[in-house]
Length: 254
Image (cartoon, rainbow, N blue to C red; front, top):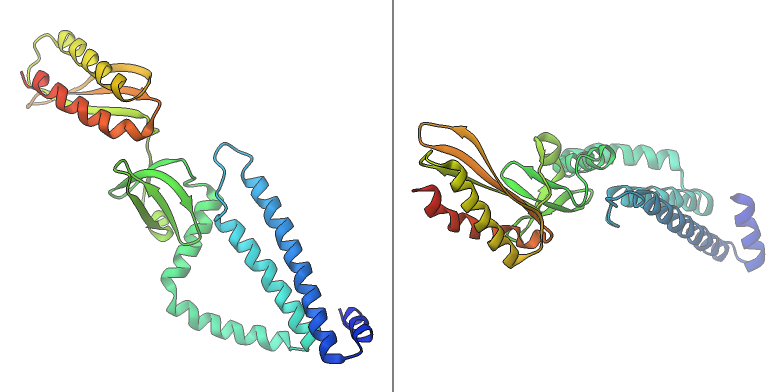
């Protein structure tokens, strides 16, 4: 780098101006390298069926590392900054900052773990605690999910890494639980429920998998069961589930 800086200085005829131009040239090169590597990284990550969005933690970390190295090169080669002393000072400052930003660092580490191990990915239908929804994005601080009510829920990465993550079936698959109070003629009851579920679902979306009724458990209160079906529009899953529940309530309570 000293030879490169000397060449620039000889061309410009001024020491300070040469340093500035050399710094600009180095930063332009760093920017080009960052652009190429980030583009390549996105290409690698988006080859599968669940591409990681542009705000991916890996993309941001890669970009930050490249620019950090580039700035260090500029300071060392162009402005004679003692990088050893600077790194030592940054180390001391880093310890102080880590104590003050424990939650942020916890989210960062959790984000690396989530992305590297692919615990959750965009498109996954998950449950974390009481929050259920489809993953929209995973950043270095949090994951965002969209629930069936259309609400966007932001979950810190530290919460995801410390709690159980339940991977649910795709939101297009609808399961409506119910309890039949009478065990008389369950086959007839199942046929009625299937017909009602089909008619209701067809009003909202195209049916991918026809409704099916399963009786799962006998309890002191009644017989547990559920209606299973799949439609092609996840946005209509909640209205369909609500409509089926309302429609079959009089039947299962006979």
